[in-house]
Image (cartoon, rainbow, N blue to C red; front, side):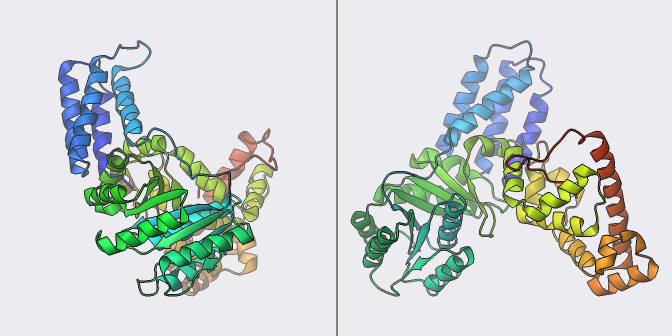
Length: 447
């Protein structure tokens, strides 16, 4: 996410960090570089112009603080202005008060609206709230069935009346939710190929008859400035309360994320960061600014670890803390936890100072975790518990059973013993005073 724009900002910041003082010349050079970066990222021209002027004005009026390097002060100015441009603060979904809260999702066809509806329901479920998904897209083939499948996947009920009038469907769904005491109703309305009059009248009618608490425009973040333009036009028809940018896991330029709040006047509520049902992130302007500028996002990384950790993982961690033997069953448990957190590229990309060039050198192979798991699964129960008994003939059998080479099996076992040795050292030196608390400690090991 934001790979290209991040790489370019990283290069600019490397130059800034070497500044002895802030001068008119290096201000002009830096703002020129930033202008080019943002325009190439498909950020709206007028927004770029306004952003540059603010950065330039603040830089020119900066009083040098002796304890902070001038270059770092300049970086902070850019960081602060970008946070403001992205919306300033987190804008959560409306909550409290009467039930149910109604969320109307709107957008162009192909934006990922149906999947997003299920993702929101899953997000709310994890927050302890109940939801009802409403199949109000009666035009796209298989849209209703897709929503039912997704609803079953996250154990969320789906309200459907087949190919009936969408307005009637939504009204009856609200009545159903009231009778069941459900917290949120989520309308998956029909997508549009373009903003045609008839379809817009229909969604306006749904809005007028149901009075939604949230009207969220779901837009494909990969489409850049087109996404911003469609959101702007749509906001003139409906009173939007926010936007959701989908498909942000791709190598997009970042223009939509940077522009859409300023253009529409409403905040970004969520980002779709993967195709998985839990691939939805609350949009936090500061964290996104950190990512765009290559400053990392350790907070999100920790949260992912906290959400993914389970009982089995805690038990394997307790083994490390107590100095007990860490076996291949624990190792495969850790691998599965990492897979739950997302792709290797996504996880590593959240670390401060890691850019795309560095990740290329790391040669991250997303299939490596799958191959490692396959090798371990080809071992017997005894071999997993006692890796030291795995001799040459056993390694040959494991390689054949997993479809991998003997060299890969050898490498895995060697790395495993290196990790266990490191863990023993860590448990002796770093953890003797640490205790697991039922409510508190969330800890993951790096494999």
